[in-house]
Length: 201
Image (tube, rainbow, N blue to C red):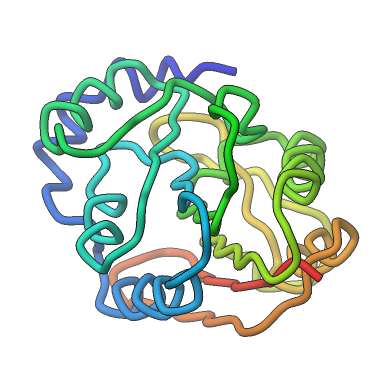
């Protein structure tokens, strides 16, 4: 799986989004995730790490972080901006990851670009690679009404919005139990956004 849209817009993306978080609630959610992951053996994997800004923030909070992204151009920026961190060219299945324990998994606004059936497959793959107690945090543009994922007109690549209940159900089917969720609206953004943390049983 590749992301030609992000490859084409990587330079503009790097100029437009110099900070890891657009809204304060995102920073708080990442901090809570870092607390859940702290002290666990292995690496924390940032799925769809993009420019690597969030990976760097988590590393600054004491986590051993590995970034994964299917866009070589975005990874080029990540490696330039954060040369101290490892980055891997790969997709949400984590098939490209080196062997070794996974302490935690973060997927912020990256699974929106994965077709819903492939999201389910990827989460099942995660479940098979992590041990009991492993935290997973996913963030996504949310649907207001329960039901299947909804396609929307993302400016860079095809994308889908999930209702938080539907994503929680998907995680539960793969063996993850929801710990908490945050659903918030920003006046300058057209969709609600959700952060959902679940733990492998």
